Image 1 (tube, rainbow, N blue to C red):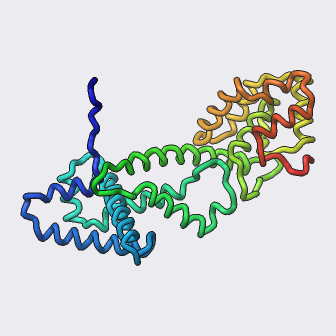
Image 2: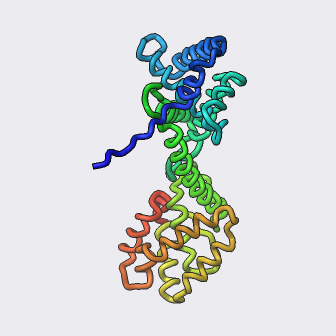
Length: 290
């Protein structure tokens, strides 16, 4: 049996420091050690317990990860010697700040498509930043570190969520009955309502609904038998280019799998259909069923 080869991937800071060995740059090594100690003290004060040995160690691991993330960002396609040169020329503080900005920017992207008023609360925002910083940047210098990969994975996922949230926000602002300003947002629910109502045709944008309006839609579809594809095309024609990909993806999915759309022309009872709609729209249904 052939054993799998495990590739070592230590934090970028560690790999850069190793390049100092045998180079005779004693002054640079002392300067770098002093700078890392200062960053660690700052991190301990702000993010860990700076009065315990454990808190200092956690702060040091976060310093190693923060600097390493910044180096990966600044020197994406360059080697460890270049990373050492960067540290000597610009300082570890510069690299750490670059890494921390990456975490801060990531924390400001939505984690999921359910957005609440509390998401903008300063206390929550700070807690979210701290949790991400600890999750991604904690790096034991003696072990492999995958912080960059975790960052990139979360960044791509959150950018996708952001696109959904922004598309839903646009639909809300262009709701046929006037802009919807409720701070709580179920982005997937908004998009679902818009796509379901678009089958009627006419290009009217519906971002929120209630029972009476849904009953009207069902009656209209059963009577007029509109072409769903035409209705979706009319909706897409109104949506700005930057939001079209999100809606096109959902339309593709709903075309085959949305039970409301599948059953709306059948003799399915209105109560059953409305219950199906709740599964898609969630909190974007009017609570009073008006």
